[in-house]
Length: 417
Image (cartoon, rainbow, N blue to C red; front, side, top):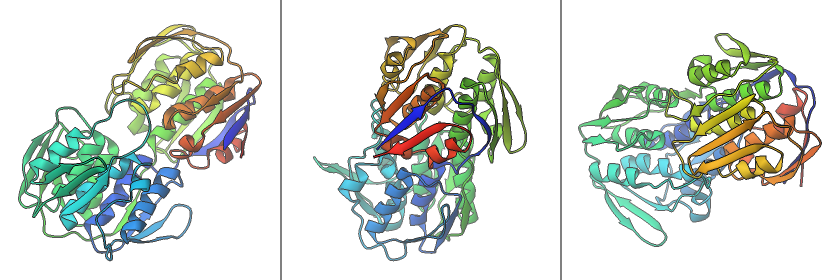
């Protein structure tokens, strides 16, 4: 399927933010830690969620979707510990299932995970963490086999900050014997929300949201209702979209406190906006100023917003530098923006220089990954003439019914086979 977008249309009104993709995936994995039924609310209706749900169903989980955003999940009758190869290949987040499955069942077979092609993302940190917790790891041509008699508490130091590894080892350690101390952990709001839920189920986790997390292992966990927090990446993306299209747009159901650095960078670029407790009101800005941005772990400017910011900076007055510090392959979408008329120079795999402002024109392009895909949608909305974006499955992986929601604020966008 593809998107057909006619740019230059007036954007405005209100748009609602969905539940956080990067929390919902981990919450679904957390259902494996208990035999009781979990109820998940505010789950985004996206392809990555559908994939992890299918993986759990294949393992024997019973899952009922009550409406567009609520799931009831029971893993009581799971009858195997080998993840389906074809399903796991489509979803890199399948690695987060390993920690809870080891804690509950003591073994799991994991095919090599898939996901976005945005540079090397080795799972060495996960493997080292599992080994520290007392897991035996065997690697073969098809993937990994993890096995343990009982997870044991340990002090583990992350060599680099990793969100998914922090969440995975934190979940595993909830049922380990003894105390686990995780050093140099990620601080994202989603980690704190996950820890709060696990604590409500009987876990003993302290320090979530800081760089040191301490987990006192318990014998078992219950399950309860988990309300997924709003997706800060989506909220930030909509803010950039409004800035790039010079629109009057109210972004509802979000937490501006989780976007302080991205909002600061928008302010530095001359973008006008107002923030409330659960909304951001983007106001039309006459002139966008060139700025330099550097991606960083939370609370810095998250790498998932780098591509939308790059599109915005093609409309800024002057020269901007973007330094992508997280993934070495995340800038390779810029050739598609240059085809549309942007003036972007790739200095090396981590840095680009953007000269602006430049007019963008419609083109036939392809979405390479989730975040670059939504950036190309933004570029198409400000471009003159028609744009065709192929491989929109990548966009669907992270953004719920995006064409319907964008049409609701004035965009001329349609999906075709």
